Length: 77
Image (cartoon, rainbow, N blue to C red):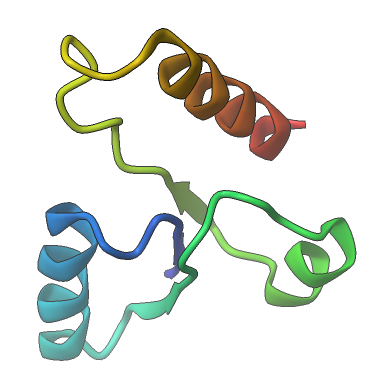
């Protein structure tokens, strides 16, 4: 399985990286941000895209929450 994880600084991406290192059937690609180039995404061709949730959205500025949601929507397109 080919996994693509965005927002690499999140603890979920660290846990997935550790697990992928233990398995021979998982290929993991980790990217720092939430912006994807469609051509690059087609080249990587992951089976699954993992976008960690926004940490502590209750204390985040509304603009930060909106920006995160919009980035997720762009990735889904």
